[in-house]
Length: 95
Image (cartoon, rainbow, N blue to C red; front, side, top):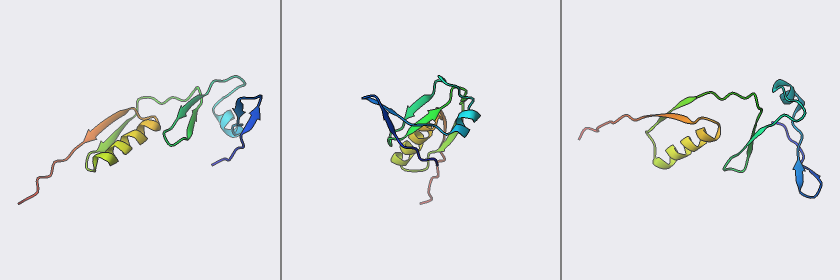
């Protein structure tokens, strides 16, 4: 993980630099737009314009508490997975 310092330009603008290696690999040029996603935990996700998510599907097992399932789905959504398949196995216990 890279660490960058926040700089202030003007009275109300904060800036950070991006790693050159990432910029070159992402084919960024001066003026290239970047997508910035705000995560619930306060972090930012920065995506270059050529980033192609496609339609990724993830399997989510429904074998846990509802709160854990919610967290799993929210986590997948934050990282860009917007298509989910749920799998539920019903086990009837012998009495």
